[in-house]
Image 1: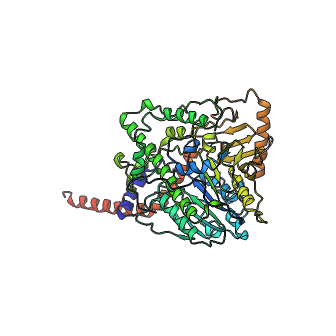
Image 2: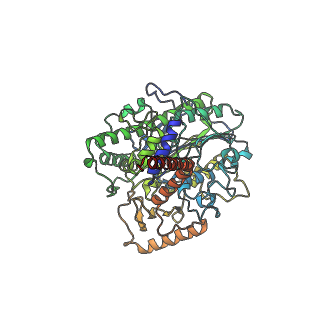
Image 3: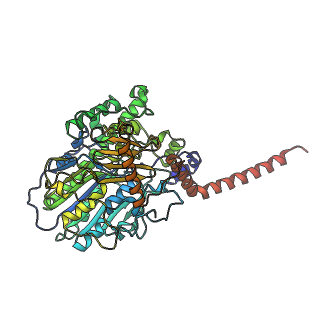
Length: 607
């Protein structure tokens, strides 16, 4: 970061008093390249245990992928879906940290040390069992489970589970790692994306990264880095690898060659896209043909209410987001092409998922944020939006369309925040299948261990999920029985799923804290509350949720808990800590100047 940016940061910090929700290489290509091959590998599966590649997308909505009905070009992931299985009822936590903790450990987030985003951890709760603020030692990562069986493990991308000696990947079973431990970062340069951070926390093999390559673009760099790790590993041993993209976390950024491919696609606005995605979800079999499409939240804007200038900037932001996802898909294809060329892809289980629903935050509306952007040298120039030095976000209305036909979006317990794509392809997986089983992010670890024929490590908490292998192979029709439940809680956002029913409570900013009951299969958009029609069922599921919360150590948030207020206060405190010495020096200088000025004025007074 330049000295000019630092000076401007000091001038802007006092204006940033209402801060925002956290979301939120190869040279830039001159033109969008053709997709790398991801069709069925040519070689027959090997007899040894499978390799495993987990691809984590960030803030991707239920219908954002081509295989899930999107207009966004994701040919590599779509090819994986054709030779594998798509899941229609897969759920995660509504924000990144608890999802990633469960993905890595197979244990409920309240046991891992990371039950919520670090910016929302109530200070009085931090340090209590399961609330340590980083990945604790009562759980093991998938890399740690696999290591005794001879697996080598690599990760490139967002980690966000802690940077202590107990929680960095290098200390949790990974042989090589290049990770980001912030909630997000710029995709072109080494700098933060929120006032909460002084720097983007990139780490390589346990050491902080001081500089990034001049040609850094995160999807390309992370894919290339993971490919190098795999290539440099032992070819005689199976690998477990994680590619954790920032696509599509704010700031959404993409090369112009990708952005321009979506010219005209979003001109009709978000209501039109939401309807289009609803019909696509029906056409692809994700939801029933008679599934209703609920209205957008009443607090959201209508497309017709925007001025021409607002529409132009909104369309361009949506184009950047589409280009960013397509770029990530392309660079995933580059990695898969290397695995194919080396003969490894045929025996690689590939798992693609999103960490939560689409990002709704539009930070530019928050007082002080635009001043912080200026202090960091960010631009919102529409002519080059998405390129180096720019900052874009899609906002809640486009997020609602990305989650269509579901309700709400990231950070809410409504299905738009929890229900996301999951695609699994590889040896033994049924091709072209669409599975409607009720599944959860804790199922990934037992699935991988089952496929690798590896027993979980002793001495740590038992796995909470179920293996998906029986449905992936076609040997079973469902993962859970009609009485099995899945519980979720994250800073008061809460849900209990059983069979086709969902008991749910969403809090602010777009929820109201009321518990509601839905038939989530017939009514995926959560449009018809069944609480009055089925009070006995609601009471039964409420009891099941309370049992889940007691079993997993959920600590209720206070009645007046306001996540927006918490984020703002934490951000302001962090900014003041960062700039306190600068501000103190400025204040001292003003005092001295004032004293000198007063003395001069006294000398000039007539006798």
